[in-house]
Amino acid sequence: MNNTIIDTNFNFPDQKSIYKGKVREVYALANDVLVMVATDRLSAFDVVMPKGIPYKGQILNQIATKMMAATQDIVPNWLLATPDPNVAVGHACEPFKVEMVIRGYMSGHAAREYKAGRRMLCGVPMPEGMKENDKFPEPIITPATKAEKGDHDEDISREDILKRGIVSEADYIILEKYTKALFQRGTEIAEERGLILVDTKYEFGKTKEGEIVLIDEIHTPDSSRYFYADGYQERQDRGEAQKQLSKEFVRQWLIQNGFQGLEGQTVPEMSDEYIESVSERYIELYENITGEVFEKADIDNIQERIEKNILAYLN
Image (tube, rainbow, N blue to C red):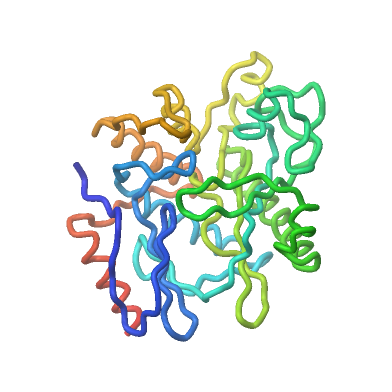
């Protein structure tokens, strides 16, 4: 089995704290600098799978940093440098406690809600007469509260966010504006690559100067769903499933194997062959979305490589 990075315990100069998310580990240093390591952990239904996926962290980190570079003219972001294929370094921010989910098509969670007979999602109406994977007349923003590790993200409406004081109205207006602008740019980038950006989520934070910036990941297979544009309409007309590039194939495999993250359910065993196939799907997405050939980093001693590169950057 390939070497994967599942957990890190680095100790950098002027290190203040470590935060371990579902996939990323964030080291807070003095001078308001954050070092974010993308691990090979795989999370689905808010549960971290027991085995890592080779190259997944590198893929997520490199897509996210490329996409930040491709959108920094429209939305400021936290990024300073990428000293290693699995690492991003940036400004410390106070994260907003909501994820800004935006959907151009009725897929995934929205489709599951629709099938259950619900026509409102996060306070936003969904038109009657739609079928799964149809395009919405306009993209809809359906925020979610940001869960702690082990908890589930929960749908929330704009009204509830403001009523509960999770985000101020002035800030929320900016979050909505940035979310729409990023989705529009992401849609254009995807189109150039023969893909459809179906839905995605963005996370934002505030710098100590009070500037709202994009943080975490953007337009990766973990945060976004993509369809292949070629044959999309024909598949819709025939009522067939869409050919997609996202983490949804993992979710579907888990559902078929009796797991949806519910109490009492056990994560099914993932064979080495299955893990290899997931890794290949992630590489396929990387190459499709960036238009570049994926270059595998050396994973003989991945921990040592990452630590060495971060220390060299910090020095």
